[in-house]
Amino acid sequence: QVQLVESGGGLVQAGNSLTLSCAASERAFSNYVVGWFRQFPGKEREFAAAISQSGVFTTYSDSVKGRFTISRDDAKNTVYLQMDNLKPEDTAVYYCAAGNGDLDWGSPEAYEYWGQGTQVTVSS
Image 1 (cartoon, rainbow, N blue to C red):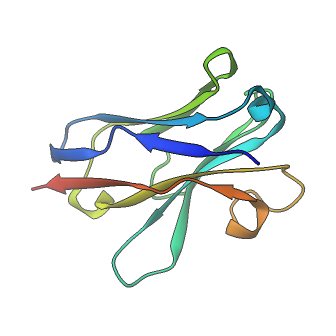
Image 2 (tube, helix red, strand yellow):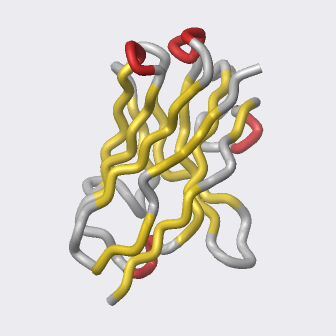
């Protein structure tokens, strides 16, 4: 059982940056694909970014591509989401998730473990 804890959320002005962290409870974290999803009020969770077990492969949704960067530090059992040039429409609860990578990384069904989420609010 992998436990994930997100941190780094908060209130930021549009155009600024924020870095989210996803810390895992065990070293086996390196065996998992890790994704970041976000959920807007009243909406389903939306894929934002994912990173392969090796860290070599990454993928992003069109809405965040070029502004967000996902990375991982397996020595620290942590995955990061660097968010630059934030926009008010990025306001959401952000979740990290871990899975074996067998399914479409953009689908929540690909992930077995989820964190509790962290709120990101971007003011205009």
